[in-house]
Amino acid sequence: MGPIVLLGVPGAGKGTQAKRLAQRYRIPHLSTGDIFREMAHSGSELGARLWTDMRQGNLVPDELVCAVVAERLAKDDCRHGYILDGFPRTVPQAEWLARFLAQPPSQGPLIVIYLTVGYNDLYRRLLGRRSCPKCGRIYNEFTQPPRQAGLCDLDQTPLVQRKDDEAAVIRERLSAYEQQTLPLVEFFRGRGRLLELSGAEPVDRVSERIFAALEANRLAAAADDPPREAEAGQS
Ligand code: AP5
Figure 1 (cartoon, protein in one colour):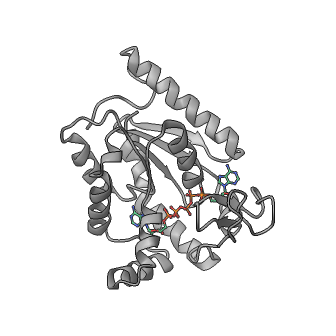
Figure 2 (cartoon, helix red, strand yellow):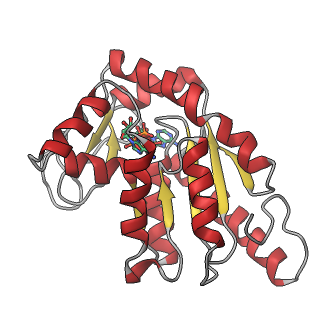
């Protein structure tokens, strides 16, 4: 399995599906949002600067993002594939990734899963999101509540709400997405790497569709046919 990118608007379900993919394919899940939240809470000066950007719904500067991703991808566990959740998010980040993947050793074809969800659903998803600070499992008060209110099903840790999941910040995040991330759809489509799937169905159904699309893609590549939408090879 080559690198997989999960692309989509805030609340599309990237983190939810990335965790399932990581479990299924036993490859690491790299969430730049999670990495920056951890750095932001570290108490460092850099962390404080990051938090200012994130708290306002702005993107973190490209140079810093690419440096953090490069450091993480250099680790041994990324040798046999990985899932990028929330990266790339700008055209310069995508260009950096293309250059990175073009270097040896070959990492297999990049596949971009683009999850689409109507804007009407997003506020409900983001305002209702709760997550477990211990195991990272994601819940939703409306659509995916825990069995016991406010507690993680797996380890009974009290769930928390992200500080950027408030209406005013969500508006800014959606605006940053439209201006800086949406152009990546055409960027990857133009390079034959995009698998566009609806993220609006129930979580299990979305997972099934992603697994099926990846399997179809893998079989097509194995048969040495051009895969349906995402094409083998690096740009
Ligand atoms: P990040 O953490 O990446 O946030 P995001 O992209 O805004 O995405 P979210 O995590 O909000 O949504 P998601 O698509 O993962 O949805 P989820 O699965 O949680 O980034 C945060 C910040 O970090 C950015 O604003 C920026 O400042 C900075 N940053 C990060 N990466 C960066 C980069 N590359 N460059 C620059 N800055 C960067 O699901 C959401 C909710 O919906 C959950 O409650 C879930 O239970 C529910 N849900 C999911 N799927 C379904 C479904 N199918 N049906 C019903 N409910 C569902």
